[in-house]
Structure formats: C-alpha cells, structure tokens
Amino acid sequence: MNAIWPGTEHLLPESAVAELASLTEENDRRGRLSDRSIEILREAGYFGLPVPSDLSGGNASLVECCAIQRRLGAADPGLSIGVNMHIFSMGFMVEHWKRHHDESGQLLEQIARQGQIVVSAFAEPGLGGSLTRSNCTARRVGDDWLTSGLKVPCSLAERSDLLCLQMIDEAGGPESLLVGLVPTGAPGIKVERTWNTLGMRASESDTIKLTDCPVPDDMIVHRSSPGSLGDEVFAAGTGWFCVTSTAAYLGVASAAIDHARSALTRSRITHLNASRAELPSFQNALGEILTSVMTMEAACAQLARLLDEGKTDARSLLPAMLALKYQAAEKAIHAVEMTAELVGVASYSANGPVTRLIRDVHAARFHPPTNFVTRQLLGRWALGLPWNFDLSEVPVGQ
Image (cartoon, rainbow, N blue to C red; front, side, top):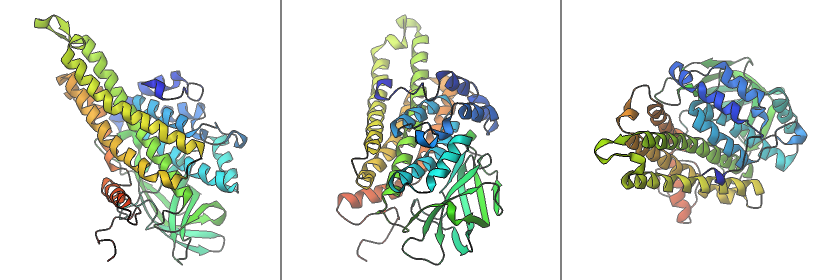
C-alpha cells in the first residue's frame, strides 16, 4: 500500500514519527498536545515543508505533504489534523506566491526560517460550510484593517505564531474577501480553550475571538470576490485541504488496519486450531476493507500529483477533489469500524488504541465544506447548473 506514495523519510525521519506515536495516548488522554510533539516537528523542519527551497523551505511537493500527513495520521491523528491546518494555510500561500511572486514570499521565508506555526482561521459559525465567505468584518483605518468576529474551530490556536484568516471588507466591492496574516499575540485577539470532543482531542481546535484586531495592509496576502469559484488560488488552496486532510484520515484507517492485521495473527480459534489470519472468512473481510481504502489512497495521490504538475486548472479539479474528500471520510470511517469488528471485543475497550481510532476518524465528517454543501454542489455541477460553496434551499432560477 505504501508504494502508492513517495518516500518521505528525508523530509520527516521515521524515528521522529515513532517518537510522536509514543506520545499519542497521553495526548489523547489530556486533550492537549505535548510540547514535545511540536518540538519534534519543528526540529525536522516540518513547518516550512511546502515552502520553495529558494525561500528557505523544505520544497516538498503536495503529494509529499500528503504522504507525510498520512504517516502522521497513523501515528497521532489529533496532531496530524491539527498541523494539517498549518499545511493548508501554507499551501494556500504557496499557490498565491507561485502565481504572483509578490511580497508574500517574504512571509513564507520568515515562516520557514523560524519554524512558525500558522493557524488556519477560516472556519466560522453561520457560514453553512462555505469556504469563500466570512462573517468577520474588516474596516480600513490608516495602514490597518480592524477586524472583528469569531473563528472556531481553530486547530493549534493557542500555540500558533500567526493567524491566517479571511474577512470581509465592510465597504464592499468586487474583491472584498481578504485573506491576511496577523501575529497571534496582536491586540484584539483572544484565544479561549473550548475544544472538548470525543475524538481528535489533541488537535487543540479552540476558539478565537477578534475585536478590532489590526491586520496590517501589507499582511493581506490575497483578495477575492465573496462566494466566487472563479479564483484559481482559492480553488488550489481548497485542493490542498481536500487531499491533505484526506491523507490524514487515510493514515487513521491504515493504523486501524495494522492493528487488525496484528490481532488476527495473534488470535486463535481453539476448535479450529488456527489463527483468525489463517481463515478465509477473516481474510475476505480484511480484503474488502482494503479495496475501499486503497482506492481512496490512489485517488488522493493522483489528484495531489495533478495539482503539483500545474498543467490542469485547479478550478476544473474542484468537483473531483470535493468528491474525494466526501468519499474518503465515509470510507475511512467504515474501514475503521470494520477493522474493529475484526479485532473483536478488545476493540471496545475504553483505553484501547482501536477505540481511540474509532473516535478520531469520525471527525472527518465535520470539516468544511460540509457534506450538505458538497452533495448540492456536485449535483448542480453534474446538471450543468451554476454551482458554488453557498448552501441554497431556493431552486435555481428563483
């Protein structure tokens, strides 16, 4: 199964991944990450992974980033999905820089050199799963944009160095959706510990409240039209999120499969004088799980490669990327649940690793765009109707 993905040992050593895995149970129990988990990634240069080498980054391709997220997802799901929001923000900025080669390159170099953590402050209540809108208002005052609103959930909010957030220029206009960066310690930013969930407990996806927070105009890295799908940078950035988050959850599924493989080998059925691994019924069940997981692995890697190549307009890949994210969530959840059944009652233990994976994998359903938005969007796309990320209950044309 690993043959689908490129080798990434040179970007993140296996020894580092093994140490991260050893911290997972405690991270989950506490509902917060160990400082050491972050230190391991920083020592490996993880936070500059997608930044081009001429900007002091790791120069990792998107498919390499996906391969790493998959490895992290298998080692520590909460950490993986938490830092994935950093990778998504960096991917968005890299896609912008590739097309404009503007001052945003200086920010990328700073982040890579200093190993800074960038929190993706895109999720908000009341958006209905839209990625190209914001309820956070911004008004221009001198050289700053004073921003107010609520961002939740925001992974690694408390330990981040910078926020990458979208906001709406209250004056309106064709490019009133602004994406900018601001130091987490800036005035008007308050982080509240609100994350207390069944799974992905250590992702530290807390709440950020913004009250007239000054975002310097020279920290605005992208401008777009609210609700528009005509922006190639937003399309490419969405692609980064779809494939890297999918890879993280496929890592969770791969960890569950590994546990099942080990359990089937150890567990013997006395009256048959054989291990479960030797019995065709259990072999067939494991094979069924792999058919769906390996299909998602191949699709994820291929879409990442297409985005890497840059020969296909990212906007034309959006339906496939969204379909991948939707299906991968369902398939990963089903795979983990099926492996739990193969392991048997031991997987129902309150403290067992399979129980934790069952809790973690269900978070896949809650990342925007929601399943409601995705189904509607894909249906309209298939019918040749106008489509975007805005959930609508009004028939097209009315």
